[in-house]
Image (tube, rainbow, N blue to C red):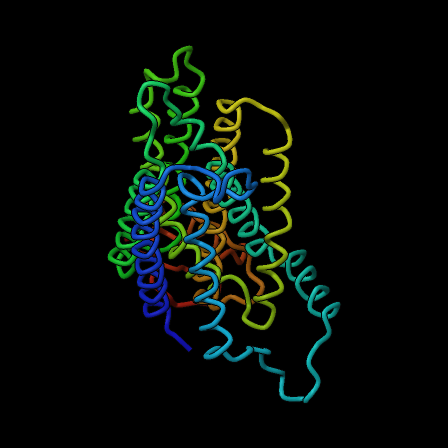
Length: 340
């Protein structure tokens, strides 16, 4: 098992390597698309090669190589049992996951975070190509994709470097704010009368969003490992996909304009921001409360400088109080009460 710090480093390294491969893939796809003209394989044939078909043909070759490598070197992971010899059934896993979602608000809120951010990301994937369409200068989609992946790689590196110093909740909060602003700008550009006048604006805002994507995945991976218990982790992660897929399908089938889609993406990111802030506050309370030593005590947070009246009332009413970052227990405790 990995420690929290090492887990964050491994996530950052994994996504950095993945984005490096994606950069090469984008450049290779662009080179293949430009190498040959789009034409039928033979006169009168319905099978075409070259042009924009080239990257798809190259992808087929890559998938065949991956299939051979997986078949030869990968072993199936059946999971681990609880030691009793009987593995839980599919329905038992689903019931455990749903029960956890109902009991633990942090797990439920994390599902909202995942669905909102990744739903907006997939909606963006379907819309960035028409958003950058230009009649005067045909966009090189492979090069643009490579630049997007380079931005993602920079974000993954930032998450790795900031991991020991900035908590995942704080990183994700800043990421959602920046992503919200990028969609606000891109929705304005998409709604302009002449979209080509704002192509540069749209492109820069998309780069900012891809930077946020690069920060998001390593950070949320660490947060998931902290919030979701390992025993039901696979089941809960799959349950997270249900609202995520519903959001993506709803956005794609609703026949809304591109500008409206980007506005809805911005609203989804606001929902993700609110959820992650609640998770951060709840996690702080759970972290500090056991240190008060007051069994069954109520919990309250007061700002520094509120004075001794709050502390005296806390002792009388058996309230565990946090003054700044010092824990002050209720009656019967001899813990220090000075504020930090």
